[in-house]
Length: 520
Image 1 (cartoon, rainbow, N blue to C red):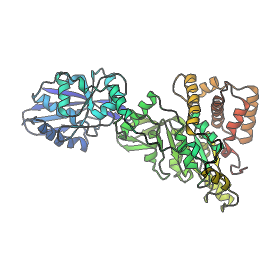
Image 2: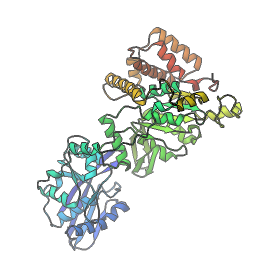
Image 3: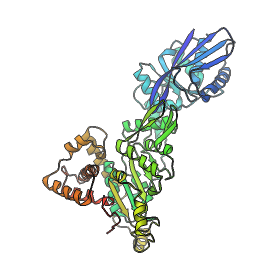
Image 4: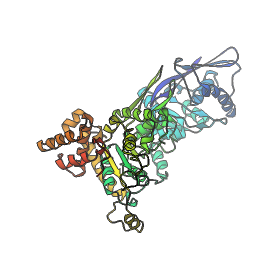
């Protein structure tokens, strides 16, 4: 008798069905077919040892195990559990009447206990769409999957636990509930490694720009001398972003689960990601890559829902730098190989930092030793199409000695904390959610929404026309100034965009000037 067990494989952040077929007939040997990789083939020895450990035998017959569909590569160790259950059922050692009702995955230890698998959240979504009665996962993976929605998820710690469920015995104690998830999440300890804005001395204009960026989801670049505080400001920005909605948390968790980076011990990811790869990162590390169907997400996808921070941005390899243009604009990335094409989300806030010249000290009195040609060549690495996609451009000056000493003594007056700024950012994000009817920021508006939600008065149109002609802006920069003006108006509790909002938005685009290094 052929036994069939439903399981799944992640392709990108979506799960596709895989069926494990087991047949026990006359003959000898165990044969595994179905384009399995080394990890799956090694599972046979693990499975045999685990079965013996919990009191089951390997029949002295020919066992054929097929992973269908046979034209799709199978990776990972999650097929251990379905293979073990198939051998038990096909050899007649136990009746498992509910075997067809569940989707199940799990890695077996040699003693029969279960270890977590990647992609449980996406697999639970597939099981519900396929009409399954529920899912059976290792306990930690089940905690991750139960955050999806009210769909029965069983968390097993060993092979005997799974057999209890499939025999039809009362196994309500193995059903993972949201209360269990919340109890586990309540024990989570968050390490507050974000810099507080109140700890950053001065830089009020830069803080204002970062607040606007966080409120509307806009991209930012900071230009300034070494030690001016660009990295600290970027880390502080991560601390004023609003908490993720459930939909955002599910999407981000699916990306990390598919990449094998989510420990799955506490359910969904609740903190917005802050990714800060080194500027020498390769194309595959930034965009994503891999062989065949095993394409893993890169930094642009791992930063989805949060911040992608690139320090020393002008030092980044030119081809990798230009490859960011697509994800920044489209908020997704498509990775194509000969036999596969995977789409990952890439909806992140891009924050970059760079020196203004090779020595790094242009604009700081007479400390710069670079020639005008060297300065222009250095910032010229930041191409026009790339700068078009960055809404806010900030110059970060070094502070005078008096301000540094006063700040060190604690005499910094009027410095707002991150909590105060975060409250304003959250209020503006709520305005945008009500405006668009879903979790969406002003920076993500399309052309129709821009026309609908950003009407301009004749005075504003005249001011914007003057700005465009004077600065020589592109059509993309034109639309981004309007989006930025909408965010500034939201921060000011203004229903309409005013000329002051447009002028402030335009002031954040000094790199678009014909002579970007003509610093005032």
